[in-house]
Image (cartoon, rainbow, N blue to C red):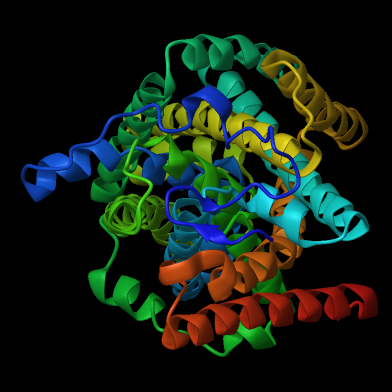
Length: 448
């Protein structure tokens, strides 16, 4: 690697004509160098909310509903743990992008031999497809619940969202962020009303945030717990965040980067607390409405929709649930597409039109939905949705380990290298992820 340059970060060492992450959108949004703290923060607000989308996408719904209906409030501790892990990992991702001027995909390509880089790229693409699979199912279910569109037709309709992405991208990155934040507010309001209607017991909810041994000793609980982690800490989000924080035109100096990092971490932490509320709300709702009434068999989004209004005694409950699901699916579409572009360009230097990239990944995701629906009926999509989140979790080490390694390297990070305590915490988080995945594999193979 070339030396660390004060004005450019980690120099583009292998290609003199290397393009910055996200091309023309890099450093396209002006920020204030003076003014109140809040006004300066507002210029940085956006990337955190875009990455928070991945922490409340339709895949979370399936795992949270299954966890709440089967185990009550027990798995709230897993949601809290995974959210805290997400806050740390996303902060590291932002740090990498700001300190080096590289996104995680570019950093992996430059650091590792080409065969290793290609393996990491394949793992990333698998994660994107698994995420897209959840979005297809979630959006298709929402279309069916709201408008009566058959699931297979709804899945095919989701391919058309490529035009939404193209429209937003042409209007600039701020328009993309505004769209995402607006839909996040819709989701937040919908679940706020539903929690108020459910009126869960506060003491039981708070007790659920305390870890229980049942989470590890019960294979069924562990399977859902790892699904929750996979649905919460998403591999492609680490690549996405390291890129989109660079859309801000902060001074590419040490002081400028330090200031940008503080605002970027504040932005992502606040946004991820919103994601924590939404994830916890889904599980709390399932626990208070289904588990408490003996309906521990509720695992599917459609079951939840059908039962919410009768059990809560409010007709609007099911409609709010479906509206939030549709908003979640549309939002996830935007961020997954952008992450796919960053990953492909970063690892392969391959630029293809946005519409082509979207249609390829969406097409790959649509096929299994159509096949499973045809073979097993609509009930099979629920199991496919949970499985997609476990697949996401299995890809996590391939993103987390390189990230922690890079931000711990002073040669790459310069003055923004992480301190020893944060390095230890990051490796502990990476270790937890690896151990949980190994246990899941062992249990799956042995049939435990």
